[in-house]
Length: 340
Image 1 (spheres, rainbow, N blue to C red):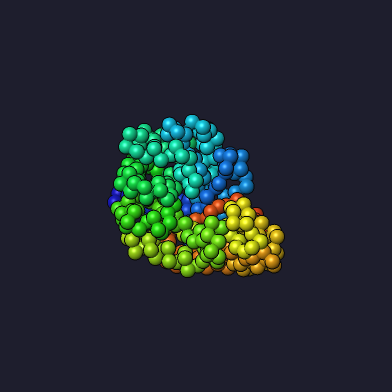
Image 2: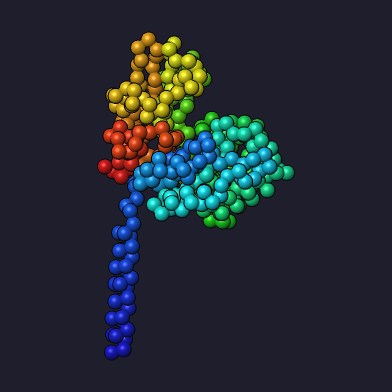
């Protein structure tokens, strides 16, 4: 009788535990089929004030660009309390938050911080900021000569930063391009130190290369970049494929400058009503603007999903129209990621 009574209680306990677990699972939002990571760019470093411009319900991760150090390798110029408020708000909506260091145009004082004499203190400062401000991890966006000038130094920085971040339960990610991820510049060991790699599958050409007009972020480039990193031994589930929310113009009517030939997707669909359904706009007497419309964005998202990739990375979120707009690129990604 005692054994039967005990067995009954055990069964009841298992039933209640299972029921509670199911209830908790159902109470959380349905995750998308793949993750959606958006870079959140604020030239004035005013991310908290600009947070309402981001639709957190349509992303799984945001990456603050760029939280760079001062010449001494410290982050005192950044308001830690404001950053903590931001990460808290994002976490309330189950969105992970990273901060990116470096960028395509980092301060000149950045490179010396990677040297042996400065590196340990710099890494400690990075990790301390991640912990104090509640970040989920750090994005290493070191590009061009910060990688190629001294590959041994870069590898040491990545290895030491990864160890320090993982010790605190934080992630390390990296924005990468194919040419500087070749064995000449980066070992497979270094690439695999990153928890995720954000592939910058754009800028194959641009205003700086007027002799090579054409698409800068084709579907074929995205799939080729993904295949490259897989061939280098990176698991598919570590790879985000990057998509641009902007375009480049080529032609006699477009000056070969950033300001003269770079257009946000928002400006394109505002100026040209049918832009969302295409990847190029021919402007009479001026030239052609190349970008990604909703169809190509959806196709790239479907590719990542069907190939087991981590997700889609966006540069950058503020260049889109509002997600309530039928032409929104973020909406197109979100719906395709959810299988809609």
